[in-house]
Length: 364
Image 1 (cartoon, rainbow, N blue to C red):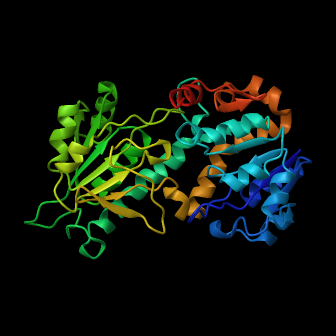
Image 2 (image 1 turned 135 degrees about the vertical axis):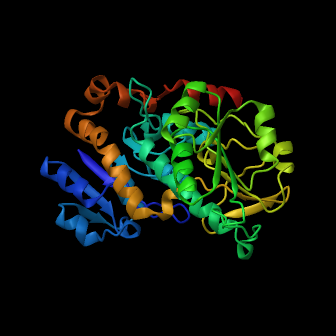
Image 3 (image 1 turned 90 degrees about the vertical axis):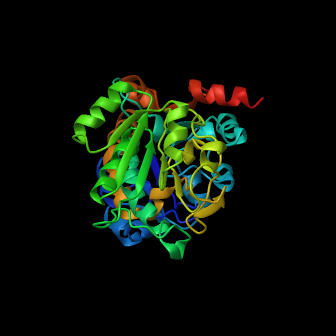
């Protein structure tokens, strides 16, 4: 099988689809790996590292995409990348198609491309084995972002998250108690902040209360509770996920408007459309904007600037699914792995994922 690792082309995207170690495993098994020149630089991997692992370097995106039976990406392809894709090929990556433009999903169908979204590969216990470590990384990254944009020189209130003796800590509200929300809470607590977690699932709140030994305040995420906490939050984090679907809008404009000026909003759900009415995608080059006098940080590829850590985390989590496709071929792999099968958006020139079908139907 020809397996290709292209250079990522989105703003400040330093991750890469496969490490040299992964390339070595594939080439040792008899597969051919093509790596676009400089694809791994942001993660600390040179072209020479990939060549030592048995990979072959190509020097254009057109060639990288054109040679691929299996294309290993990180972020959703750009319009140009969609044009480069070869018919009847396979693409794996964080595709988030339900939140993207309809034309992109339809282009995959037209070219008979099997699209496998890392974010929707799902085990029978409903866990998300590839998304989980990246969600955890994003959650752990959130407090350092909140701390930075709470500084006066970044437009914030000028507060220290952990406070000082005689000075209370920041009030941090996290909407969503899943992997990213819990990871954010862990690091916010480590910095000394006062942390509130809201979730619709009472069992999950019990788990979080036990895990954090009562050090976080847990609340059911009814609308009146969300409105209540927004009025005093110094930092508001949206961490809501419905796997494969566009994220529901949980926090409305009025709630944001009630926040104190120069508070910080971080929408971790923005790659799936965002869970806050005032959210819109930003980039690492221009990470924030002011809406209703509140600082908004909404970067879809947030962990893209932690290239080394993110790439290793992605490689560890995605490898079993890459390996089974390389070993068995696509059809046998889909039959052998329920989790992989649940990660398919398009196959045989059809949209097969129910949430993507619903999203496209809703745009007609």
